[in-house]
Amino acid sequence: MNKEKVTTATIRKKKAEGTPITMLTAYDFPMAKIVDEAGIDVILVGDSLGNVVLGYDSTIPVTMDEMIHHVKAVCRGAGRAMVVADMPFLSYQASEEEALRNAGRFLKEAGAQAVKLEGGQEVANAVRKIVDAGIPVVGHLGLTPQSIHRLGGFKVQGKDETVAKKMIADAKALEEAGAFAIVLECVPVHLAKLITGSLSAAVISIGAGPYCDGQVLVINDILGLYPRFTPKFVKQYANLHGQIADAIKQYMEEVGARSFPAPEHCFGMPDEVLAKLY
Image (cartoon, rainbow, N blue to C red; front, side, top):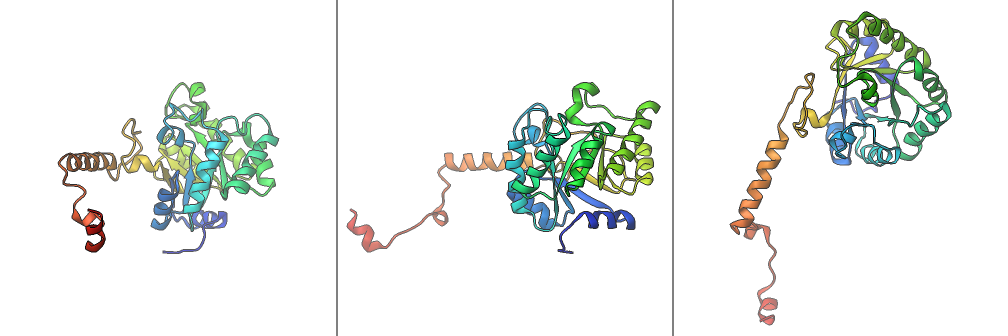
């Protein structure tokens, strides 16, 4: 496995060569270390941690301080992979200056190598300001969870001509503003293919089909750790929720039967010391 650090240049090279880019989320040190050692290209510390780690009903309540806390942990576990930090709701929408300040915190305080923010033409100026300050940016179009109330729920985006044309324009606006990559979420396959072919920026799919430059999924989804909801576009590669539950039940049974701890799990002491205690 190539142990050279993944950078924006790596991502651009993979795009140019047609080599698929791999991305997964992680939210803490041990998972980041596992994902990194497996050889993943990019670790996204998504604001999806609001759902799968913090127990919120959406990503909207997630704060900058919560994101900084988790990004720090992930960066300590990541060696080769590029770490991208999700900018949470209202951390970049109010003003370009605030967007730059918060983006800078992810690099300066947490150690991330790039940030991700949702939106198209409406955030292009903020993207440009962040990029001009030397901070790499990943865009996010299609189903944008922070705008879930405006979108009317978790629905595929870009099925009609008007929305599809706007998404194409948004993607080009993000690229022109300096985004080196764009995530497309819940977008029809052929629209995603069209956008991917029209950009020099890398396009990463999450429910946008196989024709993008790479794929990203939530780690909890592929490992079966979040049974509350599994999107159609997710392939579950393991069912750790069930395995963990079984392990806990077995532990409880052994404690109840006093078969754990067994002698091999216990510490002894010299007989002569023990004799003096009685």
